[in-house]
Length: 438
Image (cartoon, rainbow, N blue to C red):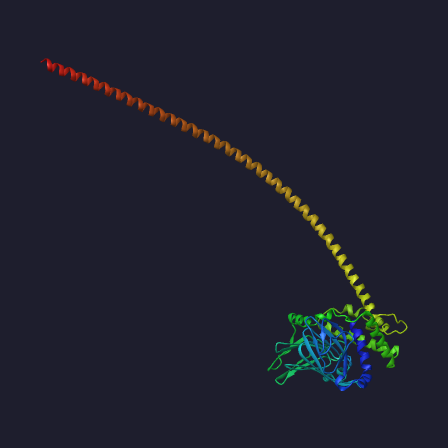
């Protein structure tokens, strides 16, 4: 929906070019308008917001985590990523013939280009200059990143064998040392200072993340930066200027339908070439009927019979509805998941209880056996201890008896000695007596 609104605004700008050329000097030539913005984006003199005009030779600075989308007068789209510095050096456009030329310079950061009417008329008329060389667009969609004396360029646009017969996209990456042609969607080439560009390679997931990261800010960017009243005034001004240019309602409807159809066809081709599912975009298979349905809100944005219609509010309501549908789906999924989780938990608990019961029974038996065994062991030990004590006691008694006997023997031997001595003394005395008598 945002893309469609951007295309409508860009159409307003190209029909208004003749008036702008008369009012502006060469030094302040209008080249486009800010379609969407996120974070802080400035030029040398001012901070930009949605709806601001962009002039020739203005340098656009996008800060960290910021970005902007510039809608050029020929319906080309320049998306400037985070930490970027981009200048529109040349912009020549004749709305009557779609002849012209675009030259832009990327000093640093990232730029994504979707070519418009000038490239459709002459694919070689859009050039992007980078520090390491030049990128020549061949009517397509591509993105480039300039950093650390290196430029990486990614071709996004449809390839040569696309199913809808769209003009095949290509980017010529070159400098004075050589050239590399990118003509297969999602192919990438690198260019370093003082060297020829590298060969075209299929982009890796890691590289694609790097490219997408630079444009992340714009994914969440809306037509903000202005109050509700300012937005209404801007829409009213667009309607008035379209009417002033002599556009009828039917003409506006036709232009919008054509742009929607081209945008849808390109998206289908890109997704098919990348091998992704396109069933949601194709819908019933009838592109015309899908375009009719999807374009109703955009067409009503310029319906003067309904001045209170606000396409931004409409988009918000649609987003809200989608978000609610997503929420409902998520809730249903969560409910199913919760139910399954509860069943699993119940089954698990049941199994756990059974295991516990079996384990408890086993442990009780083991305890009983263990207890019985320990009781037996204790009894045997007690018996053995008693026996040992009895034997010890008996041995002690024997020792005492033996000891006692020894003591008695010693006493008897001592007494015998004493008696013997006494007898010997008596004998001696008697003998001495006899000697004296003689």
